[in-house]
Length: 383
Image (tube, rainbow, N blue to C red; front, top):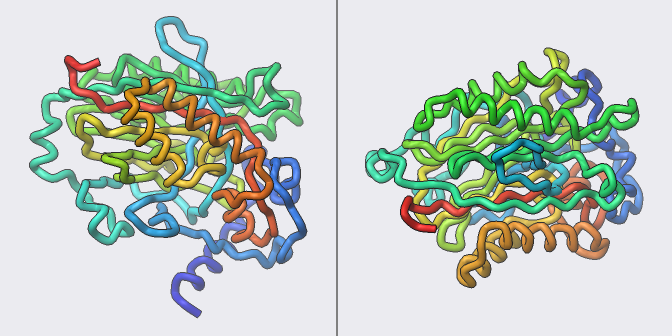
């Protein structure tokens, strides 16, 4: 048995023993038919499944190589005056994490050429010089497509776009609906509280760890959600992510980096909840990524990344930027493609691959809320 398979099986065994505590989990593996794909029959029993897609304690390279990273993300809108907001849908899980991630992971352009399982721990001097005066901003747009069954209630995702400097997304855990609780309210509140916390930070030195801790402690309504917050500072892009929310950074048609997923088990992501009964902000992963004008950031909930492969997203971004499309139009095109794939039962998707890795013969996409936030990294003085 290879070391990789041995680690995968050990992680699956450990995580099965830890599951069941805390907040309601996302739809279980047994409920896969309701996700829009085709479930033929379990290939193995739940107790015998393997985490074949396991990426390690904090993640790793995506299948197929090319410097890509698997990650998940969640997004949604928050009714807050003065902010450009709009809901967007994404869903699903891809990989497993065995526990708390490293406090900080940094990527540099050289990471694509090196062993991506060993991310660099610091930003190069040239990159610091390039970004030292924060001459860059985020020009952002968003698209939100609620699950067709949730259109009347608005879905369960939330997001914010703040002052051309920060974006955030959250995916409310739908399991709370069975308790008569609005599963999206927690996501909306934690994003609103994150904006308040950002406004209290020094504008050129936002501490995202502190922001997430404040947002979590200030959110008291029942519920739970994932969270992903990204800001551009004088060190480049900084991000914090907990759960199967996430982001991808694209440069010149290639993936510069992609955040990994945090999951306790298949389709059971890390999640924040009021109090201390679930995962806590200190389990989140923190990222630093040097960027340049022209880079594109795509953040989304699992409804996006469960249905589109990395190359699918990159292809849309390349076409959109060459055509001079605005970020919101790009987000709409990505979300529309994700919805199309979610309803296609005859095409393999990241979610179907993960389901098969977990022991199910599942094929097709996963119907879910889909949130996509697209940010163009732009030099000040340029529109």
